Length: 330
Image (cartoon, rainbow, N blue to C red):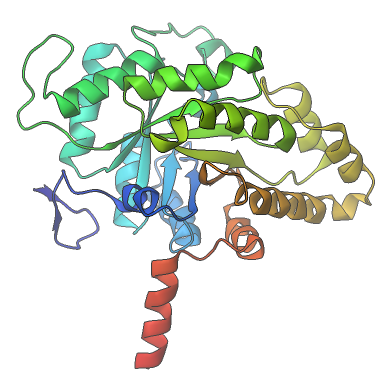
């Protein structure tokens, strides 16, 4: 058994976590994102976790996101766990070879981190150390296969035994809007065949394109083997709109949404962006095969509970029941 950093006894490494149970239940799941600090402040993670506790099934802790140096996802995941929020530890291939990747995976399971999100990662040239040497010993799909092999067969890439085998829920990422669009569902199918059990997508602003993607996902039977969690987030300023529309690859903002945000007074753009995010989540709940929403609100985590409540998907059912029970007891 592994020690629980939150001090709540012990948790068996093989026991399913909250996110795994939520996906298995078939209810609409909610995940969010915690961006680690650029300094040695453990309280920064706890503050963000406090905002999300009870509202999400799990929270990603990013791994040097956009190739910028921050507190590691491993350390941030342990801090989130100790603050009462189930973490999804992200692990990229950019900075580690296969030895270090497998070591980190074993370590995560040993310390009770129940979920991992595996991805190739942004190239260092996009970050704050553009001259750093990229590793990319293996890619994200190969890392998913590696993790599944370690967990399900108890073996490393070298063939040596891992005893006891590590256990986590294995996640991946996909961008339904990146050309060629017709290939995205099949590409996700390859990741699921490699062992991915849930996927978090790029921001969904163009629901028409996303619905066509989901139709292909259903046709391939992927939704029965992998929980599809759609990425969402509020656009809080015209500057942010311009950035995501022109600087972030693979994001498509429909003209109708652009006109809607530009058609309100500057002081109301943030509110309109929040409302659009709420409407997108509500529509996602009606799309067959969508397992949940992944809310990305960088620097605005305090707004996530309001978004979820207005969308009708929060707080989490067990949290609400516990709160009601405490009220009756009082």
